[in-house]
Image 1: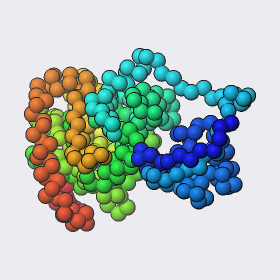
Image 2: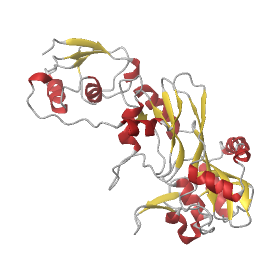
Image 3: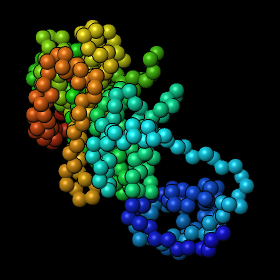
Length: 352
């Protein structure tokens, strides 16, 4: 065994729980061992007793008991997951931006972000491929649906994760999606205010409109191009972050996102076999305060292959879509000081 050591908390570990700090830096200690040493006062922060849930601050000093020698431990070890060179390259090919604090990916459609029932392949299980020069894996700070492609941000340390998570939960992160919807909006730009409530159903959980118990949900939209009356290319900016918000809002307006059978049923396939039946929703751009200096980090992701093919088939020019970002950001500013209740009353009065 090694001797007792005093370790200072680094800036990357600010806000991390003490038990998770041990798991990261001293994996030789089991969770039970850490709890036992905490109860006995063998682990301390700045000389004081601590709890497993204690949040660390940079500069604090942690008393670390002698680390057990694993070479004398005859217990069977759990095999650590490894990735093949092909798998590592697959994940790294998604990277569209990287610095010391943030990694941005262009997530392909069809790849789940996290695991679930019957879901063996997911991005969360591949993050070790993105350590690069860091000792720790990057962390998820927001999500995209499995069938939604586009920009996904990862934090490269605990402090960045804390700041970015706060941005996504608040109103400082701006997200713009491109979608192909199965109808032409009545106006070139507008907003959708429909409170959403999660409801169980035959096809699993689904978000439904509920003015009484639903959570506030507001989406801005701008039409970019159209194909007759059957389909339109729209830019969408969610000002709230409800589950399936864009899909539920478009479906409720009888303009479901193409390929989204869950919220559009057969109406989500108005063009038949002319284009792919995969869902046509893409996280085009994210603008968020950078966790290091607060300057705006703006990242764009190219369309996924199945949407590129659809755009070519329908004659859309991708360059026409970027002007919609400025339009939506200005529109968001106009509504920023409008109380949610006021929006609700206005929206119901117009019978959208």
